[in-house]
Length: 405
Ligand code: FA5
Ligand code: MG
Image (cartoon, rainbow, N blue to C red; front, top):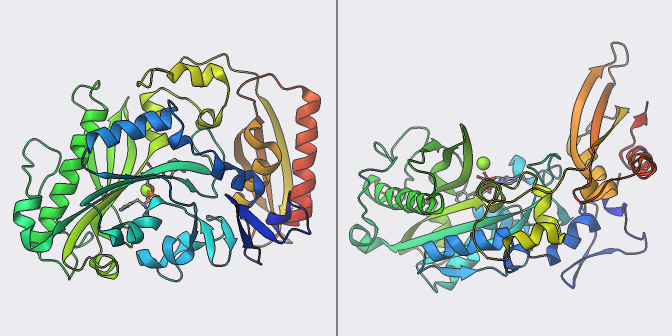
């Protein structure tokens, strides 16, 4: 099967990203629906909620160098190897990652640029914002493109006590950093790890309390995490309207990454946060597709450049359609989601697996998906939705080799 051929003339054997051409190969799975998003640059569009939030965080970390125009096409070396992902790490799977070809991907996270930014040695701190791409499910909080901000901070290893020491009294940082499941690196002393770790979490708590300054007594908690490129590692969650919301991942940068980036004399921390996650709660934006809207009823609400609550315009009617089929071995739900994205675009609000069963004799597996079609800016006719649904069925049958029921 070749998802890449969905809407591209067969004669074209290249993928174009921002004017640059890459040869296709057997691992290409990116579609033009996705590559078209690389030109949007929402994080640099004045008075777009993503841009407003980005500038707020940049204003908080005022001495950090701002980087926001890195190319989204990166090598697998940048996205994975330079960050010490093992050869068989699940993050590399083509079910989760958009491959331009075997050696090139659309970055799945801003960490892909850590090494090259550190190599410049231009500043002690960096804030790097970019669009990132992941093959994923479809619902109001998932979109194949979203925005991350990477924060990086390094310190002179010989002067760490003076440069990194902070007072953690009154924060949510409790106890020692050392734990069996969240270890200090062999390359670091416990004291070094503790200083960098506390500086990291102290900085992030300060930033988040500044962002959410309207929320009195914002509750923050730190969950031990694992990333191949940091240790110890954490995820930060905030209690927002009764539920815990994951805002970011972070940790002490693996010293091998520092060494490889000509920073052997330094130690540092990194964080990566999702801008949509935060923007959805701060601006009250109920559906992640809205960020991509060019409807003035959306955009004009943010012309002040301030954090204001979004006033939803009326919801248009939903239209549910089911599709069932027998699947081949190796079928992945994300492959079906990709077809829906490609055929229906932003008309698809939600795709849910509603039924799955195995035939007792043949052992074949049947799946039934329910697609919710709803435009954000108009009412769709039944004929229009029927046509899209027929096309989804046809493309699923021809490119995934499933047997429609
Ligand atoms: C990462 O991407 C790491 N690169 C973060 C990091 C950087 C760790 C530096 C350590 C040091 P993760 O996949 O958890 O981790 O994503 C980080 C953040 O991006 C999440 O906390 C969340 O806020 C946001 N995010 C992740 N997936 C999505 C998604 N599908 N939609 C919206 N936001 C998302
Ligand atoms: Mg995570």
